[in-house]
Image (tube, one colour):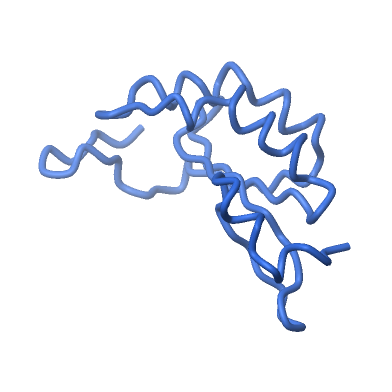
Length: 113
């Protein structure tokens, strides 16, 4: 395993980094414990980044788009993650991190199938 860089606190990207994409709600739910461990070691953890909050966000708004969770792993340890909302906007496929109700009240979000 690579040692963290003392100036950034981040580990260097190496061969042992594995990237995965999750598009299934059940697979996203299964990330809960590891996701929250990752949030808790952040310098300024936010309750809005905890798995329970984000999973409910997906359950509430998920019908308007597709789930696309990007994760990075070192062995069995989750080291980075972001939940994305994928849809089409003006004919272009977009992947966005949307967690505010105001994000979904925009006119272009009203007719998403």
